[in-house]
Length: 195
Image (cartoon, rainbow, N blue to C red):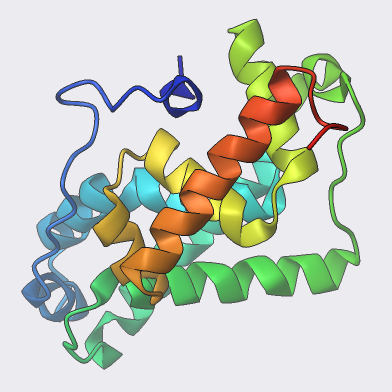
């Protein structure tokens, strides 16, 4: 199940890999080191995917943007200056590419109730509970709340890693994560209209 956190459970051991990115990778990538690029990709792909997916809500567009993000990282790695926030730099590239796509297409995806289970681009999600929670997340949560929730759930990032990667305080990430869970629980329990 993708969305273990709605029940309040912590990630299963081994699910979340700590994102400890050696900033020297960018210098190596800038010098054409394919192994360094592969290492960076393996280490960060889930986080980048979750981040872009939380904005675009479309797996096909997300895959395209993730691919473009890594191509841009590879091309611009020589420009990276170590500041202790490599994931934030990568998120910035992904966010800019995502927003460019949205401007170009002049569209945003809005899911109606039950639409997720009928869309073939979400056919890879087989668990009905996952579909319901994902649909609720897209319907109820702000973009930033979705980002935090999906980064934690899909990529297994720790809250402090999300805060560092998004460039926001840890307290902000924790409060928005808790608020997101509360909204989803309320919605899924059928109490959306009550306080």
